[in-house]
Amino acid sequence: MADRTNEFDVVVLGAGAAGMMCAFEAGRRGRRVLLLDNGDKVGRKILISGGGRCNFTNIHAKPENYLSENPHFARSAMARFTPADMVALVQKHGIRYHEKTLGQLFCDDSARQVVVLLETECKEAGVVTRCGVNVGTVTREAIGFKLTTDAGELHCGAVVVATGGLSIPKMGATAFGYELAKQFGHSVIDPRAGLVPLVFGVEDRERWCDLAGVAFEVVARGESPTKDDKPKKKLRTPEFREALLVTHRGVSGPAVLQASSYWRPGGTVTFDVAPGREVFRPLLDKNARRDEASLFAALRGVLPQRMAERWVATLPEHDWTNAGLARLESELHAWTLRPDGSEGFAKAEVTVGGVNTDELNSQTMESKRVKGLYLIGEVVDVTGWLGGYNFQWAWASAVAAGRSL
Image 1: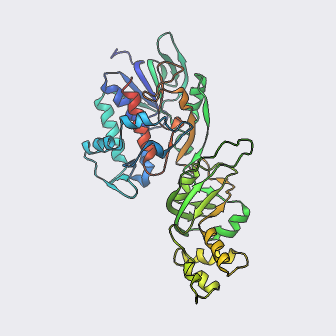
Image 2: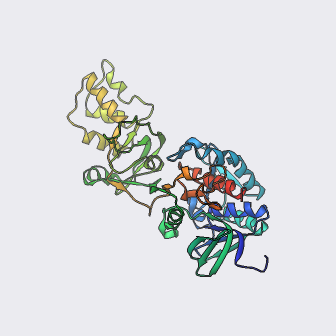
Image 3: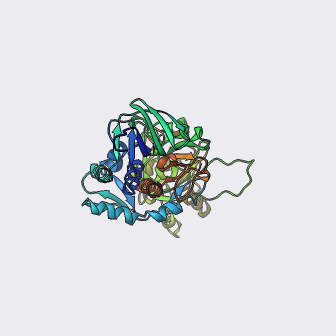
């Protein structure tokens, strides 16, 4: 088959993190693998990740750190390739790294090192890589698949869809993977922007957004809108204690990005702007002053000056009784906003939703509907938290597929 350049055991569509990892895992098993990408080079999103240093995993990554219609789906793949396994691969290639915060691991030097790692492993495994190739159609044959591309016709025994989601379209993101999945009978959970800044409506924008650049620590939680026609008990969404950043259009920062994946249009985001603190406790003392100056002084202990000033200015007429101060304290720990929307896929780090996991084998990532069709990475309805979790899902799902091909 070495002379038959249009025939392969496996064709992997998408040369990003998941696609490259899957390609060399299959190549290691002696499979003849072709890795295709529509861009001019491999690993484009890897190169811009983590501020150019690639947050390649999170040492705390567990299935509960992922959002999916089936919260248990990621367990099998995550158990087969753990953060420790990724660290071992990074160490094998002599890449120096460091832990930043909350278990996030970054390259000391550059994200380019991770791309080189993947390219090296692909080359050693005999993977054939072709960039700048656009796939037109993928059809079933009596044995395997036929692909038409602008570089010619291809035939293979298995197809792996690793085309990513809709986030960052300027990097080449398209809906191709979802359309292909639907063509083969799969359902797709509606994709939406995740890990994305949120945008305020006119009233909240006028009230807060002149404070753009102000940042402070919060505990954030995003919620979907309540639907009266669905009385089923609503599960409490996760809370994230990180920084909030006020922007010219709304809010961003790690805490907001995390909460955004759980927020849906019409829903709310709630912030505890003084986590773990009883801010107005000093005002309850017997001889304590109870006026705006003392209120501001207490707020300055937990908020930047401009935010503290604005908070006092936006409060309704103050009730200086103990009950009134208790209400002010409660509001400080439950600042609830209803965003008008998000910055969309152009600014989203990931896509929430994707190919329905009920239709995939969780151990191999193979379609339950079409033998030989595999779907991995972001195209699948599994979305991780901010901080290396999505890379870990890319590696784990890729390995699960690659080792079963």
